[in-house]
Length: 358
Image (cartoon, rainbow, N blue to C red; front, side):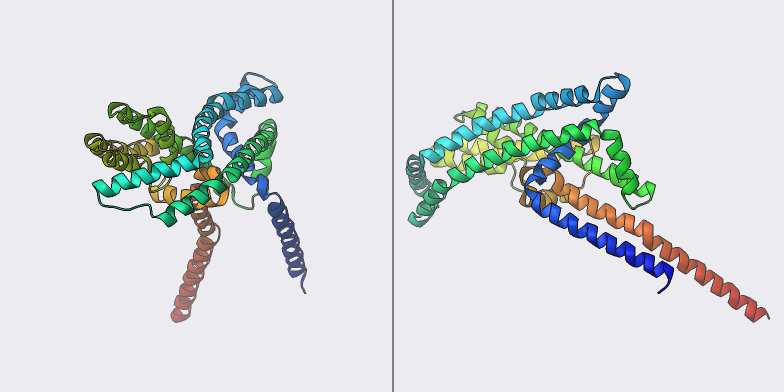
């Protein structure tokens, strides 16, 4: 075995050991992964402010990181937490009063059957629904605890990422086994996707929620602020979006005898709220980042199932990075092979011409 083959064997063996240990660590630390992804998101959004505070304002790294974390909590997480708290209080009340909820659904089903002739709730479905609601409360409490834990882990990781920002980026730049231009392409694509989804998706959802709130107030929908919050969250869901709220609401109003309100909610929902999704999505895409809608839709579907709520951001990022890595692979290896092939072909033709000349 030659010296080069021996060195290559050592390198491959070493990489396999690293990959094996990495898989074990990832498997054992997967529970903390959503918190890590959240830290990466906030780091990408706040890194330039960190550099500005430290390098221009001459603030200490620890104080600058703490200030950014406090501001991010007050500006982003606290308002979201208040909205979620209002939503969870309603959900908890509905779960603890499941019997009243089932009776209300039975009455709604009877009205719907009399007015439209559709029987949506059979006895078996109502029984399954009641069992589901009974089992939801423990998992709901567990999900709340997991979310708080993920936020705590996120800020713990974010602090050290911000304090060691320059060193961390230099290390990543050095150890990623790609050309500098490809590392730059990877960093740019990651930043664009994170910013586009972390800001774009909630912004579009908020716009749809505000438009829906205007309609709820005009058409006399009960508890409009609560339904505004629900619409904001459902608007972030792929494919269905805000229609998950205004379609059942319109049907309910129709079955309750409020014909014009029901028709108005449905027309306003499809005509104004639904149209605003496409309109503002194009505007946001031009301002923040040019992301194809299919990448966003399929990315969100994949990301939510893999990472939970933070998958709204990192699902589309996975698809985008996959496409970028294909481009990088083409630039790193396939282009070289084509160039070598072209050189060999040209050399062969030149040799053939010399032989024919002789």
